[in-house]
Length: 285
Image (cartoon, rainbow, N blue to C red):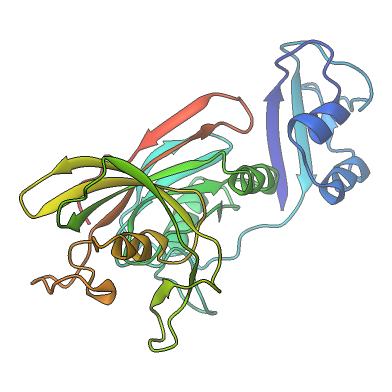
C-alpha cells in the first residue's frame, strides 16, 4: 500500500538527511527504501534533494510503498478514541479483551476493532506500539503508518513514553511512594502465573499512593519496564495485591475480577514535538 506523511519543517537549515537520521532516528533500511523510492517531495510534487537545507515552514510530503495491517475487521468491541491525528491514535481497550490476535482467524480483539475503525476512514495501517494484559483496561498507543511506528518503538525502548496505571489494592500501603525492583519470571507451578524470581527478567515499577480507605489503598503505578503481569506481581510482592486479583493472592470477591486501569499516557509527539498528556475518561469496563 501507499503511505503518505506530511511534515512542516520546524527550523531553518534542516536537511532531509538530518531529519531522517538525527531528528527521527529512522533505521538505515527504511531510509534506504525511502531514498530508492524517491519518496520526498514538496506540496507541488517536485522531488527534493536530501542534502539541501529547507526553510522553517516548508512542507515535506513523504510518500512511499510499504506494508499494510492484516487484522480481520470486526466491530464487536466498543471503541473509545481518546486522541487522534494523522500520525497516531490513542484508544481505550476494555477489560477482558486481548490487545491483538494470538492466532490466525481471531477477530474479537482490540486491534480487530481498531483496524475496522481505520478502514471506515479509508486508512489501512494501524499497529499497536505496546500492549496491555487482557484483564487490564485502558489506553493503547497505535501508529498509523510504519514510519511513526518505528519512532514510537524507539521512544518506548528509551522509556520516554510514560504510562500510568491506577489500581485499588488490599490493605494500607505504608509509604506514600516508592520503587519496586524485582525480577519477574514464570511460575513453574501455574501455566499463566508469574512470580518474583532472581533468574527472571529485570522489572521496575514506581508507585505513589493516590488515596486511602479503611481497608484499601488506591495507587498510581508507572512502568519502567513492561513485563507480563508486572504491576500485579509487584504489588502482590509488596504485600498488597490488587483487589479481586485472586491469581496473585487477593481475597475472593463476588465479581472475581480485578481492577487495573491504564488511565494516562504521556510523551512528546514524534512528529510535532507537542507534549501529549492523554487520559482515559471512559468509566465503563
